[in-house]
Length: 173
Image (cartoon, rainbow, N blue to C red; front, top):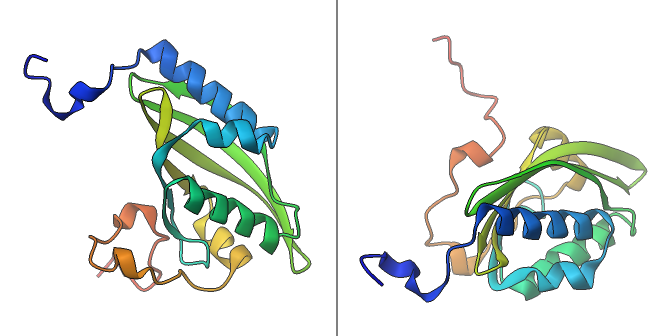
């Protein structure tokens, strides 16, 4: 194409197409329809899970997402679920929604909110960012520490915006 850069291999999605896929994605998420949900992910999807708990990190490809979802269910004794997705909005490439999720683990319960941002490409969800409303509560609930991933050790660190605020920082001095 004419000076269209690296994205010549795929047709640009319209805002309505992005919104339709996003609504289908969030509907499948809340209704726990995992097979239709997985089909909406691009094969090379990347899921960014911030935090300092054992599930934090970047998950690349559908197989790693299956691992993440399986671990969420395993750690919560099958109680983890997204209970609501609302305020779904879209542009020509991105979609976002506010989510609620709940789970029980080791006798404790969590019922929390998050912002979910999707990047769509070629009619599929290519990238997911999960921004918890209360990162400290999520870290405490899932426990453990972020896994060390050898294959990403040389990659640039995640933006500090995605991490929980560092309590040791004194902004007044």
